[in-house]
Length: 344
Image (cartoon, rainbow, N blue to C red; front, side, top):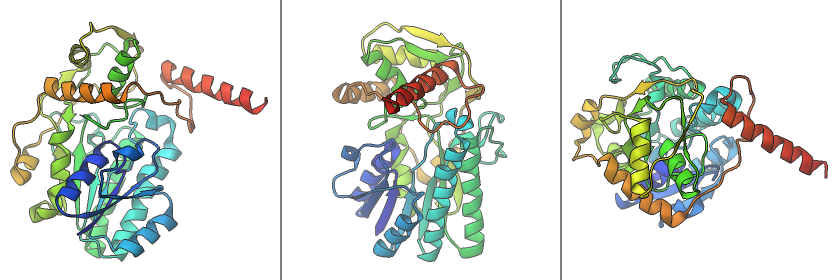
């Protein structure tokens, strides 16, 4: 079997690519390295540096390799930032997906596996389950839900099979801890290793169910071998919600330090988000999930080996209005520095 894994140098994608290789697949990884790292591409996979938004590149890859399966994990998944980067968000997360869907239809791909997000639900009734009517509240969730609907239309019109996963708050090894806009656990770890306080938007009482990578990546990889999963949607991740304050304490403990927290003005976000996973357990089965303390300890051990990472403020911001002050200050400072450099 030949499989394309987009985003395979990134966090979840690198783990899915590894599991596909272990299943005996020939794997091609497509990644533009905007959030991933070349050394995270698993040994045995062919790496192609490029973007899903490059229509000509996507077309040539499908023609060359005749993929059986497509695992589409490439995305810019900064949910909160998506309000301020609408054009970038839709080009990367929607149009890039459409490029892949078009080629999958043309080349009779057996199954298109798509990682969506529980961001599609919005502030829905908890716990979110697959029967909940999606009401996304940010451009990231809107883009993800649009791709879900497009895949349904492609199945009805062309017979393209798909499996849609809605993971949430996934953490673990290979996460980009230098990204200042997403992945709160990685942000906390990066701040601790730099001797900085952990920053929390609002009062820290917002809750999420944080999902360890080893509970998420394996079912995504092997879903193509489970016929009853075809053309279905699955929430996937952890069941138990924790507050961000609790998360900060657990992360600090993993590094053997006292939690030092800096509270920032609240941003516009869903306060409580956790999902029901009974459908995924019924179809895929599930062992005992990795406890939060265990998963964070494993990630902390890995983070110490790679060290703290620095990332530049996002350079494609389209709207500054109502942006959280801490984000805005970094972006404005970076823009002024670039302008000064350009003018000598």
